[in-house]
Image: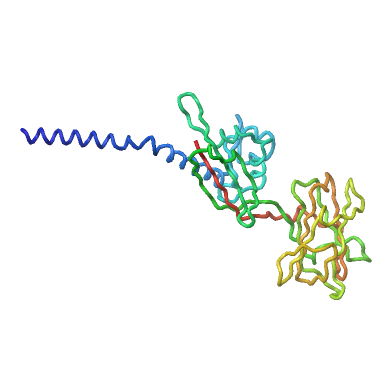
Length: 315
């Protein structure tokens, strides 16, 4: 009888202790675990999900498309689509980064950066950034500045490919020019105003006189400019790459130019307006075939930069 009594007391005490000890650590651990899960979940939504909008009848993942879709945004996601996780869409990044299109309350609500206590939503402090790995350029940043009053901050980092713009890759042999006599002046048409700088690369030049090859100038014709000579350093820049060197910023006159060299032009987007914008370049010692101007937008390719998305959360 004494043995059974002793065993019973031991088991009751053991069970009570087993139930009590985990509870002792709950106040100290639950918030940390919760913040880690919030940071992880937020990073997954941003880099693996294209987001979602819907109204009472239709919906889709192209929430960045226009005012209507952004007004009906239900979930923020930056991925191009579900089949390409960690590849971020340029316009989604731009709208996420713009306070005038998406205020802080919308970010918190659409990323569920809050917890429910009774009937009250208590928001988390947060900071979300996308930074290029190469040169540290900040592509996007939302949220608060982390300070000494932020408390314990939990962070989650994801390596991504962030789309930062577009460029056109043009074959010099396919470039056309208008003047049948002075066939050294290729032209390119850029339709409409531009959200990004106009960027194009030209290679495979048809060199006819190697001793005198050079690039001299570029002009613009549109509703605001007539035969306007662009100013290097302010309105545009040109870089040159050879078989032995990477792109190097060049002065207005670039020479010599070999067939395998590449010239990259970056032209300020504010120079382009609705309608046709025609660019004409002038080369020496390089010939181009006759014909209508090539369309810049028909040759556009996306530019991606390796970047790091960091989600920081605190209570």
